[in-house]
Picture 1 (cartoon, rainbow, N blue to C red):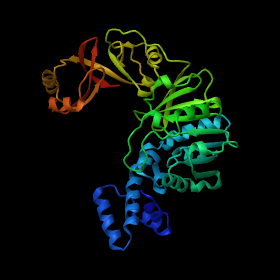
Picture 2 (cartoon, rainbow, N blue to C red):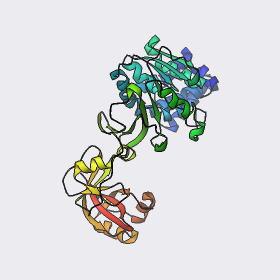
Picture 3 (spheres, rainbow, N blue to C red):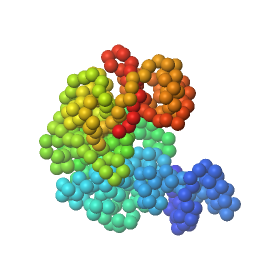
Picture 4 (cartoon, helix red, strand yellow):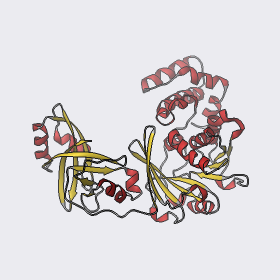
Length: 395
């Protein structure tokens, strides 16, 4: 969306058309809508904006639920926005720490600011991009003066009347559609500026889950977060927002449920052991937080092999921090022999998991020519230099 399209959309006519057009779930739906609106005499800018927003609202439902139907987006802003359920958890930490006002520096389309305002915290949100700031202002308008938005750079904001800060540095090239990642040296605001601010002001900064651990300051809490099986972000909490004696945390969210593992430091891995009746795959947030050892000890499990993030045990135990599989049998690792073994067992539906081996599950699936009514999980890994294929069932 460019400025002309946004100007056309943010009118009574544009917003009414957007509400009237409803969800456009397919390209065919969008094409018909374009034809209908152009035939009715609407301008190209307005038609493009309305149809684009209707498509984005369909995609946004996964992050914002029913709220998406009353929000505006850019494609890049939606991809980078925090899920509303996760934003609410971030906001809860500010509330529990007694913060009543937060500056959201780099607010994007306003996902985290919505979470803060929804818990009664005053928010002053800013974004360096004019179109994005205007969209955030629209999304936060229902909160009135409790949620203000400005077009400004983070470094320009007066924080004298703010209890805490929330930061989401721009880690991609500017734009509202296709963007690409940039190196940390090109972030805006810079990482150096962010860490200096957090050394003086309570707050949190949202980063990618693969952020270089060597750059994490010693005095912050590092919390990796996964949602419905995907590791989505790393948050560094500073000052009063960081919990006592917690430096590593893995928050696992599935639907409306959440579990958290915390520790004062990285947890040492446990030793490797012989393959048992069960294999456990730690959640991605647990792996990123280097808390596999904590989980392993709770499950009385050992590593399948040194350097491989699979655990194994004989105890019939599981936890929210792992996916657990009961091993049926060992199968040949050779693709041709593996295909024969799977066909002999009538397995037509196969989940393929792999760690420590150089295979492409999609390519392997084609080679297996699966047929049958049975289903199972195939775990392909290695012990030392030996490749291992395990037929298993999810527990």
